Length: 291
Image (cartoon, rainbow, N blue to C red; front, side, top):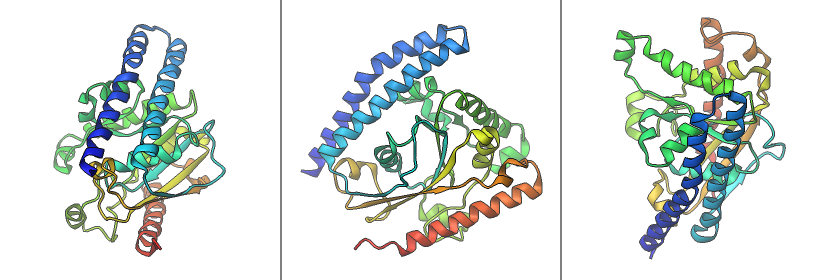
């Protein structure tokens, strides 16, 4: 029975994507031939409306078909008319679905940092490109050591997104660990955390530095699954027993706007701040009580 539920869930997801994909492709074509940024912003607003309609339709069938058991602890003082940075731990594609399920309507249009390869996903990859999501490349340390200029490509992608983010309210989501948690990755990194990988400060620091005072706040999201490491297929089948999402609003320290990540002292201070957050997150995951 759960497998049938999963197959129907996939069908609903595909049909919803195809339905909203048609107007999205049309507006994307319009955006490509629109010569003035001010006019393109109007088209981008339409694309945002389509993307949010896709998310809300997904949320509707998830709510009434899958009946997810999500325990959400979310601050009251959130607004879709403000600029936010959301940083979260990462375990599965289910993380994105859960955060959009809980936070859509509470926060502005979501933008995620995505792997470059995801631009090839049919329809959805085109949507992410048209919506000006930043696509990031992954390079090994050895390759970056040989060609340091490669890292500049990711920095430019983040810079373009933040410059555009100033034009309309937006929520930038960042999985700070850079990849999904697995015990193998934890061992390879020699992570000091029980439930988390080491956080990467560069993306968060760049977003905060580029948005500056435009950023209304930081939201630290902790995702916890009762069954352990989640599986997106299990979620679609309704097998996830319980999911907890704890969102905490953080005030942006003033010192974050008074330095540059290229400065060694500033970088060390930023790492100290982020690692302190990760220690608290790891402790929260260890002590969370489901009963």
